[in-house]
Length: 416
Image (cartoon, rainbow, N blue to C red; front, top):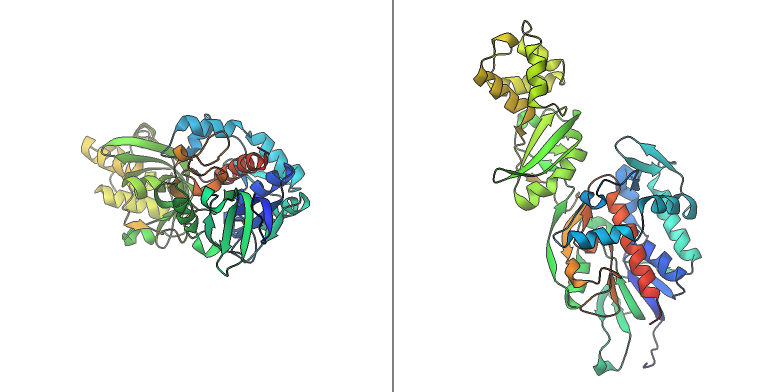
């Protein structure tokens, strides 16, 4: 190896978010001399704002199959392999006992820090990384990475900072995040680094993002929240569905149901159809027919919030004072369309500025699924949001960050 005058490490990790911190922990546990570089003045900026500052750190239980809560344009079989490397109960125990962050369960399959503070998760990761021997260097924004080449007679990577500092490392892990909430440092630069190092990316898009509408009748319902069932439909074919809570906002729609459905609308231009309170057409038929002598408006308002009920009845064209027993087949169908197949009038979305995660990214085909090492640049590893994987709302994206960070860190630390 040629001699270097710059600081030299076994593993350099770019990005001190959830995936990067986890990679640092496991690379250092593997005996490697590790440096973790971050362009911000503190680690885990996105961790601190997650869950409204409370940090929904993990789901309580895996879905069946586990990968059904995760999305990629790559191989589903590869995705399955990742989740076998570190099971959810083991990750939960790691957070509780090794990061010393007690967890509490909340409805909707969510685990939060007992303290209600996202800072405890970030601090636990930082503390463990440092105790394992990793060096964390802040305000060190990577501008370029030179890969080992025979021409330079070097078997190391050279990382260049924007201020011309340099670090030399045998292995590099890219954990730069995606493009969502760029104010925290995840501004998409990692994709450009990956491209220079030989990687192709699936076009990125905001995922888990609130949707907007120009329909003032609906924005006037801002603050109203209720459970729903949703379906995403493309060219008449249902491509996804779910059941979560829905929130009307001053700009449109949010809540877990909308965030989970959003990427189908953003990426695929899908129609999003809503069944309010999750009731089926048959549920409503039975309910309305059993109240034949009551008027329609009051009957619907027995189930739905008053303002929403009034709006839906009005939009169906049914006279609210009509008795339920007098509904004709056509008026019944018009009302059921509003109650069970309400098409969200979507005008756009709130974008990367507020999206929880980034969809798309570096293709899974370009990495070894057993190690997360690049197939294009040996010694380079990728983990977390930079890859073409993201999860539903509810702690699944932390689960992916932790699994992929651990795998990349462990494998990068192995002596060849």
